[in-house]
Length: 314
Image 1 (cartoon, rainbow, N blue to C red):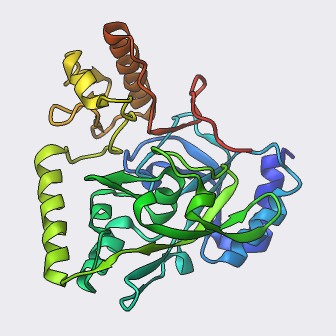
Image 2 (tube, rainbow, N blue to C red):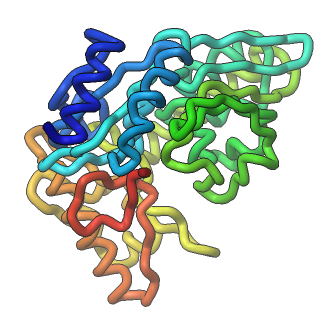
């Protein structure tokens, strides 16, 4: 029995139906394509993660992947031969302290939900989250941002659990080491929840900002199956501008195409394969580098591809 099979069997004994073998990844990502996940564990509370950590302790060689809303993730068609953790249950709880204009949110809370509920309670400065189709855990891990703001501007602290020893701890904003689409969190560190500080404002003012962001997104960004920005912006420039300037809008590989509306968005048409998207990412990367000398770096997390620059944690 392989290490992965052994871990899968032990997790099934401990967590029962919340564990699946060879689970399809497509329903877990906004690209809606990709291969099977070796072992998928649905975690509904902190105690579940402690169990997962205990089981994984004997197999540090196994790759581990934490999945939030899947809005920044592409899994190769050949699949992911590791353990993936999908968060839900108690980790989707959200509470708002209007006296302090603080929002406490579980890692599985969708960012648009956080933004809208905070706005209804008159807690502003969090409206930018409505334009990010990810989760609180993902926002903390990659310092998600948009519309002139980012997670680092509003986060107070985060509670995380280390899968290497099963211990949870609280980290301050400084501890998190947040930079442009980056944090100091390792791949085997799982965000449990986070606290954000907003400011008290009239609910109608907050809701007006929400509406403005939603209108802007509909006007400037494509719908369909995509994962938002594919590449991070190089210093002093924008990845979308460079891709557009290279004449790559509409470039296609199989069922994957560079959006005509926003060049840093790649859309997977119905029937597209994850390998189509990956090949398009590499093609665009190479063409822009040949044209400008600038090598664009993926913001998209690429998992299971033979030549991926992205690493899944051990």
